[in-house]
Image (cartoon, rainbow, N blue to C red; front, side, top):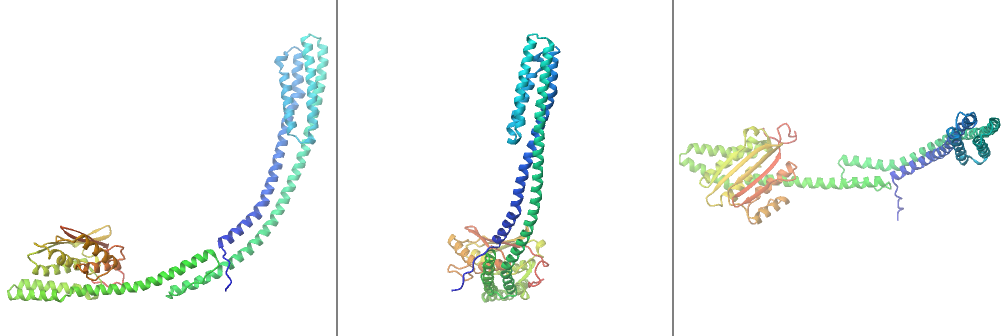
Length: 488
């Protein structure tokens, strides 16, 4: 048994490479960013704390003593001075900052907070003295004590700020070291990642190159016409699917070529049968017999008309081997046929042709209308008592030529219509048991093959008659390929 190849995916290899590269490049960046953000946050917090303490210094060292002096000098009362509000604000701020400060820098704030309690006690004594109307000299002495305590609190706050500045400086140094180490590490990682990428890309290229070369060889063979060329299996997932699709395409192409050859043979047979059906010995015999009968009767104009119609009929039928003729010739063809048949069936057949001269220069596949007219005559008008009318019409609409052959004959039963539709769908030109449909099936097949149309003839039928209609792309002489056989 041969060794089973391990299936590998190009997308998987690329994903593996990209994930490894992303991990190698992004992980150090994330770690450095986290550290830098952490230190930046600590740095910002320290600056914020120092800013809050710096604001307290003015309140403690200047505003509180000044307000108390105004009270002692009688300029303000205690309620007006708001000294206690200032003390409460200072205490709350110190407590908040203390909770946010590292253990090693809290001592100065704790001492400052306790000193503020002492300051508050002196303020209480000063308030009591003023309420008791103690002499101003004693209150001034208490005010001096307050100033000294405020200065002590201010020094504790200064000491705290100094400690925070030193801590911040250490953090700044650490942050700078982190940036340098991260930069060096990123450079090393980048070099390793580039080396890893180069090796991985070479491995991936080797994985893909050989299967692609095999694909190129086989597709070149297919392009040159070697339709039996196939690609061997590969272990690359994406190319394995492509290999299967190319092989499937080659299989279908080979089958289509075989089918095309079969269709070409069927088409030529259908054309031959159609032409043979037109050159029907009975039709030719009856027409010549009518010409002789008219000649014996001395109806020279009728003889000339019949002979001219018969000549036009066969000349256009043959068309020097051309497949495409102007619509004006197709119209003349069915006119000749109907004139000849009207001589025989004058009492039961009438016809109308509505094909405008404006579209006479459009080219169509020859022998599209005559088989339909013949079918309408022999299987519609002829077998109906009292005869009927055959109407042939054509018009150009939305880039298509739309044709209709309608008769007022006996029509078809639903079973006959279903049988005929099935035969046209299968492309079976043989005459059915019930008769009719030979020309219809041939014309339907020729429309589908020559015009590459999904649908050919459409038929509606009832007690009032039958209508066969179809549409084909409108073509001018210039639009027909040079390889097509045309008659001008």
